[in-house]
Amino acid sequence: MSVIFFPPPIQQINSEIIRSAGVDLYVLRLDLMHPWVNGNKWFKLKYNLLEAKEKNFTTLLTFGGAYSNHIYATATAGNLFGFRTIGVIRGEERLPLNPTLSFAVQQGMQLVYMNREMYRQRNTPVVEEYLQQRFGEVFIIPEGGSNLNGVRGCMEIIGDAMSTAVTERSRSSGYAYAFDRICVACGTATTLAGIALSLHQGQRAIAFPVLKNGAFLAQEIESLLTNYLASDLPTPSNSPASWELVCDYHFGGYAKVNDELLLFSQQFTQEHGVPLDYVYTAKMFYGVMDLLKQGFFSKGDSLLLVHTGGLQGNVGMEERLQRVSKI
Image (cartoon, rainbow, N blue to C red):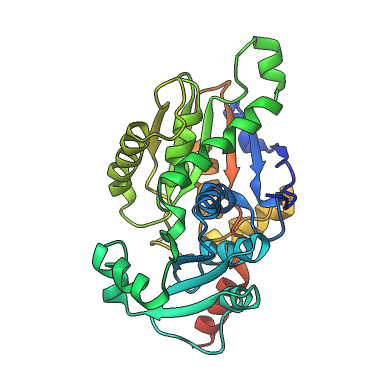
């Protein structure tokens, strides 16, 4: 794949809260890898695209909501790598198209709308057969890139960072790795599963579900890990590192925000030069900063927060919030 992706920089964050907690805090800026196909979205798409090429598919079909980062990224990746793309969108068509779907169409994606009842059955053989009959031979990528190819790609997120990032702490202490805790926002659990597979046993992955009642994701994570280790895909030499879910920072559920989260996101961007998306990273960053105040992390810990991109969604989210405020 000849498209240029920039190595994601690692940015240290300093604040009184961080100093008081006695930790080092860094951000892995996956949002800066590429203008349109960035964050964890690229890692979840990478091996799906390679498999589609190897099997001579010319069309990708995937699923998402009207503001989906995955739809946005798949449309762009398909355009960049020579695939026709079809996006199956949850719910009914609404015109004019929001910025996410408008961009996807500009990238050549065909949008198809599916009622919510049928959409809930999107991963069943019946719906897959219906889609194959309607659109012919298409390579189906599940919503969010949540399959074993996605897990495989996400195993590479921290690997590159570990090989290039050497903090002052690791230099002085002789640690074999730079970060003790890796924090990431969690939607489908694919990214968390891949990260857990890539870490050393002394490290711990902490996921912040952005959905209400996100504890159910524990079962999804275990299933992804079990299925991946049982597959013939490349596996790490070590067992998955320990991981945990912190389910208290969903702000009401998926794509739900309030004034407190919006204010935090704006202030964080102003103070540290790191823009956050409201659906995923803002909730995780808010959660980490709140946990620092509570003494959740041990003094001396080195934390890496994974910025999973998704900033394109802020435009549509802000437009929606403006419409709601006028009602």
